[in-house]
Length: 195
Image (cartoon, rainbow, N blue to C red; front, side, top):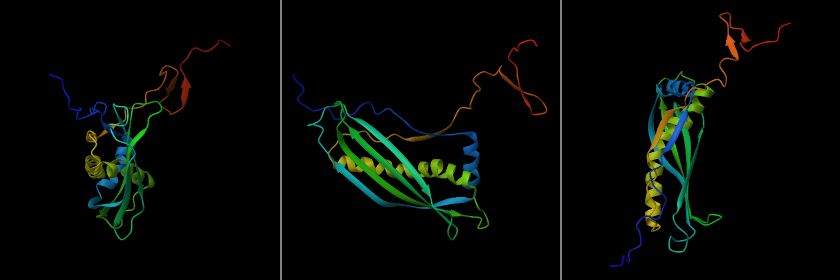
């Protein structure tokens, strides 16, 4: 018997992950701010969606491209507003790839600062907005993209869960080349020419 049904998912394997990776220093900086605030509100600020083709018209399998940014606006009246922007596009397999859909959404997050005298450093704000705020807004963006692609009658897989993982420590390229003495000065450990 011949299968006359169209496959439900013509997108490339949906087993990919979204990862935010921060250094130990960034994680510590974000933790200072995280300990002083609580997420109070998440709201959709703006969105744009366009369908530029159909799965039947374009060449599958399709691929997803996802990106995000965040902007912290500074504390006002004990509230830290952060704007998180997400973008998801679906492309076909032709060369060059043709856009199938584009979805952009921006969510406003408001964090209440519990200690009114607290003033976070620029490094804490940067690490927090690029890590914690994106992580907090991701479920909203994920649901939004899934809902819109469904309404566009696309069979896109849901966006993956977002994971936060520490960056691996930076290893020196050649540890034998430089050695730090107890006094803190650096000297070469490589062979030198005899004088």
